[in-house]
Length: 102
Image 1 (cartoon, rainbow, N blue to C red):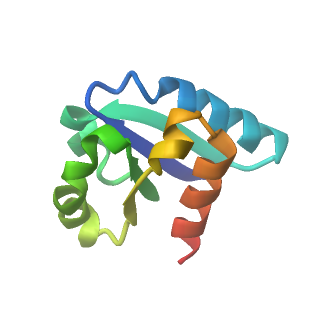
Image 2 (tube, helix red, strand yellow):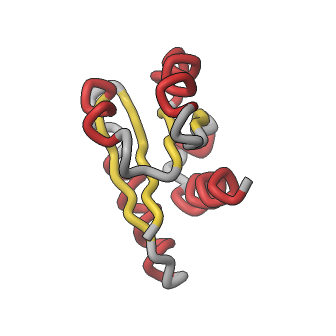
């Protein structure tokens, strides 16, 4: 099972996006765990994620998060603002999958 972690300021604004991503993953029979956390909780999940996506509102964390996950070779990127705003779970899921496959 591969794991996708979304990060936002409080861990709540991404919960709907996680739900939408899970709907697509279930429909496509993907073996994924997708969850959202606040920035303060990231360190609790350092060793159990395969990709990290940041909400657009915390894009300023990108350099810090890349450094945090660099040695673990976990890709980190920012969710596109439009995809986030429209809660496009399929597009965000596809981005996460492509990052894991790089």
